Amino acid sequence: MRELLPGDPVRLGPYEIRSRIGAGGMGVVYLGRSPSGRLAAVKLVRPEIAEDEEFRTRFRREIDAARQVSGAYTAAVLDADPDADRPWLATVYVEGPSVRERVADAGPLPLAEARRLGSGLAEALTDLHRVGLVHRDVKPGNVLLAADGPRLIDFGIIRSDALADLTESGFVLGSAGYLAPEQAHGRHTGPEADVFALGAVLTFAVTGRGPFGAGAPATLLLRTVSEEPDLTAVPPGLRGVIQRCLSPEPADRPPARDLIAMLAAGAEPLPERVPPTRAVAVPAHVPAATTPNLPASPRGRSGLISTAAGATLALFVLAFLLTLFVGF
Image 1 (tube, helix red, strand yellow):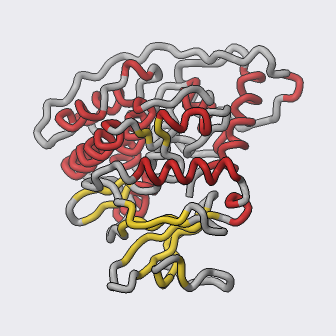
Image 2 (cartoon, one colour):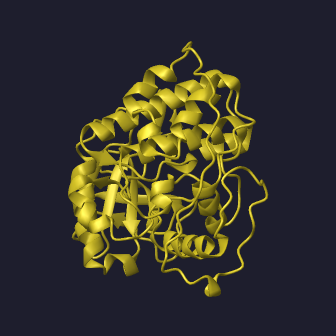
């Protein structure tokens, strides 16, 4: 928790604002308290984004979509005001560190704990996908480890089929290193993208690093679409199932409902597979002459790009848009 700063609100709707929880590209998250004493995570949209009518339309519909989820492994929506000068959303406050904080403080998770995490996340995603929703930003910072199991939070860029015309306009939404290849390309994003992100989160949980390493967003996006994930440090008991989650083709990834059993304690490890070599399709209209000088990938794994200049520029542009439209 952090102290409030000058200019922070003292009240949002019925919630008394007590402290800051965190901040992101789209807004600030506060700890709020209702008149009855109930704690809530209250997310306040930044003023410059609140002026965008398309965002407000999407925000209203996302609130309606998130209310369809049971809340067993998510932070249920308590209240919201999408029509306020600065829209806000209140969800159940979950006590517990994020996966990112847990790994930073105590190191990678042991195998049994990682399996419980994966099964809980799979249940959360099954609940989402059952009502036609796609989270699109599953990452270590958006998974909280509560006493009774993990909670998937931050529905800031969740999408339903009804939102496709509003959110599939070529912008890349999500977090580099956990985005599926189809997201990095700006293509249609379905439930399979959440399964890819689940595999990336589990990789981080058991190794302390994402499957595509660390670096600038453009570098991570480039690795995601051109290289196989680095799973050498993943325990053999999880490597097979994570490989399938991180398959480059969406159709090759298991649905979230099947992952519940695959990741359960005592489940038989899936056999590892030899990943095929991957190639990148480069947009024909990208001028190679204007390619920026981005960091080269240090790992030299399979899937080298034959036209690297054009691909690098395309992914640099996607990464720039990512920094503008990432959810809080």
